[in-house]
Image (cartoon, rainbow over the protein chains, first blue to last red):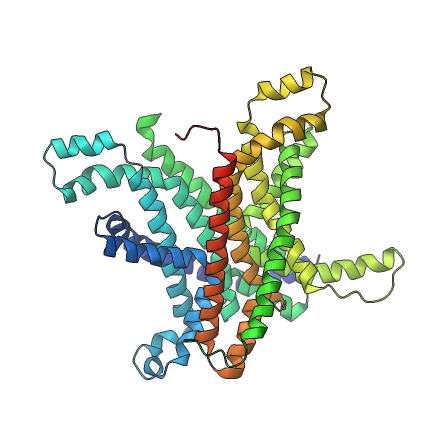
Length: 226
Length: 229
């Protein structure tokens, strides 16, 4: 182990750290924003709406994130229609493509998590809300969603970790995230141990910080159950 | 519908390699998973600590980083190790071996957690009863513990298997000719990346769908005789 390689390249790693955190937080945020209404619609009785969302979720959960990213990054260039439109400004950027793929993927997983939580709402609570004369919308806002979020938190924390690890794929399409930084260091010095072990430590540190934050959040959200 | 321009057979070859890779890594992962789960539950402090360290570290580092570490680092490591045991020729790591061992090693950690939970779900009294009958520890394991833990392990095992299958797409990055890499060759030659990656996505979707069907059947089979709650 040659620690000087690590220390002299720390700035690349911190640049990578910034990109990783930005990619992960943005795609998780976009995924969550779309996932909440879509998860509610997924539970609707309209077969067409819930079926369409179901197919979307099934396809994105059933294929590797890497392939989804490749289809978006490499695949969109196959269509002259997209290449000649204003959309090409976005799709030619690796960063946008990674973000787009991650958001779609995260959204699919989050829909499934929230749907499961909604489905497990105790019947009594819903019936009580109905008996109190609440409309469907009010029921979702006041009764179903708040308790569903609480139930979804443990699985959603898995999704956050999953997204953090998945974001390392961005390095495959030239983005300098933490893994990308490690690949640069490795190719420059041919020192795989130093390069990748440093990246591993960065990821471990982020994972532990996230888990600690979630523990604190659970402590707060589950205060009434203590 | 999809014109593969004659690349269909090479994608099919890649698919076969992907399936081989999945199954080979599954065997390693199951073996490591069982051993680690037993180590975690043993009364030996050193075993528990090392097993916990293994599962915690592996689960907090991305698969891709571990794979690159094993692929690039393992190459150097083996060639440093070679001369020490008196082998002086350059050893080239086979990417298939690197891929299988890395994926097996990663999912061993996930399987360990699943199996640990499954073992804990079997009532301890039954194991004690087995011991009281004079069964050896291995006999208790294969007669009492194992048949019952299978039922509890299937849902977690199924999840791990589905994630494992999707992770195999990464081996294309370390130069293994799986279907993703075959598709990228084809995409480069024909300038039809969308078509080829879509085909790969569809194949993955078919593989996951078949797996889900089999897992549901297994789950039903092993839950026979238990009341659904």
